[in-house]
Structures are given as structure tokens and as C-alpha cells.
Image (tube, helix red, strand yellow):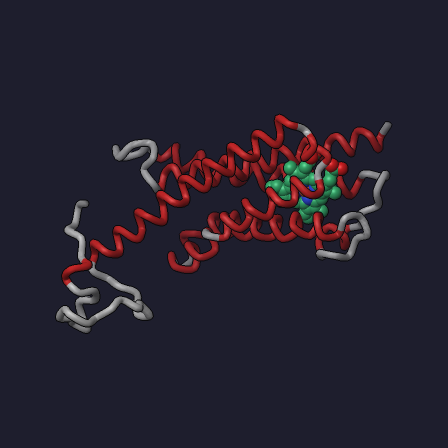
Length: 212
Ligand code: HEM
């Protein structure tokens, strides 16, 4: 009976953790792409993004704790912290372990944001995408729920929203870089046929007027 309770707790907490992590990624992308409108946004919208990430970490802790307590398959502390040290589906579990470390890194750097460089914080924060992909692969390969149609539908719909918002985000960043006239140093932009100043970046025919 106890083993059933811990097993159900592990599964339920895993699904909630995944849903919260996915919601945090979608919410963060909605804010950065202005998908919710261009008006100034109240601080609670950012707080909600942070809250979702924090809760995802909490539920992951419950998930991992229940996996350790579960007696049906034996998982020691080392097996849930070091990839490939357990005998139960080591690859499927390894995705979850790496996702856990990335989630912890994103959360801890967000808490310490005021004390670190924006560049470092941003780089670590971008790991949210990898974390979302890894936790999804983990859920589909380790979980019993992967065979349930509602869960599969939820995963497909969530992935579609994340991919769409990511494409919008990348396109907006690229447009902002072009509008500001900054151009990557390693750019292979052809320079023939137009005057190219070494300081101003791309030739005029590539520049896009600001505001477009
Ligand atoms: C140390 C890290 C982790 C370990 C050791 C671990 C272990 C496991 C195990 C053993 C299962 C199979 C449970 C079963 O169905 O019998 C599982 C499923 C699952 N895990 Fe994890 N996990 C970890 C991290 C994560 C993270 C970070 C997330 C999401 C943010 C996550 C989400 C899930 C989900 C959604 C399932 C599927 C549950 C189901 O289908 O019923 N896990 N995990």
C-alpha cells in the first residue's frame, strides 16, 4: 500500500512539476514577445513567472523524494543525483536528473539576479529551453503517463505553443539587431557591391528602419 502511495505521489508530483515548468517557460516567452500586448505590465505578471518556476522546483523535489521513498524500484540518493548510476531505465532517468540541475540553476540565478552580471544571468536563463526539452523527453520516456492520451495531447499542444513563441522571440531579436545596426562579427554577409563601413556594420541595403 505504502509503495502504491509513493508511486502515485511520484507520478502526480512529476506531472505537476512538468506542467509548472512548461507554464513558466510559456509565461516568460509571452512576456518577452509582448504576446499579451504592448502596454506596460504590472509587476505581478513577472512575479507569476518567477512563482511558477519556484513551484516547479518544489514539486520536482517532492517527485524525486517520492521516487527515493518508493520501494518497488530501488533508488538511492546517489541514483537520483548522478546520471546512469541506477539500474531502472538509466537513460530515461538521466534526462530528469540533468533537467533538475538546470531547473535549480535557473531558479538560483534568478534569486541572486541583483548580485550578478545581467549577461551571466541571461545565459543561464536560456537553459530554460533545454530544461523544458529534457524534462519533456524524461516524462515521455520514464513515465507511465506517456501512454495516456490526455497527457500526450497536453505535451503536443504545449510543445506547439513553446515552439511558436520561441520562433516569434528569435525573429524579434533578429529584427532588433538589424534595426540597431549591430551585426555579428563572424557574419558572412557579402560586402561586394556596396560600401561597407567597418564601424557601422551591415551595408545600407541590409538595414531596416527602426520601428518596423
Ligand atoms: C533527479 C531528477 C529526477 C528523477 C530521479 C526522476 C525520476 C523519475 C521516475 C523514476 C519516473 C517514473 C515514474 C513512474 O511512472 O513510474 C519519472 C517520471 C516523470 N518525471 Fe521525473 N525524475 C526527475 C526529474 C524530473 C523533473 C525535473 C521533471 C519535470 C520538471 C520530471 C517530471 C516527470 C514526469 C512528468 C514524469 C511522468 C509521470 C507519469 O507519467 O506518471 N522529473 N521521473
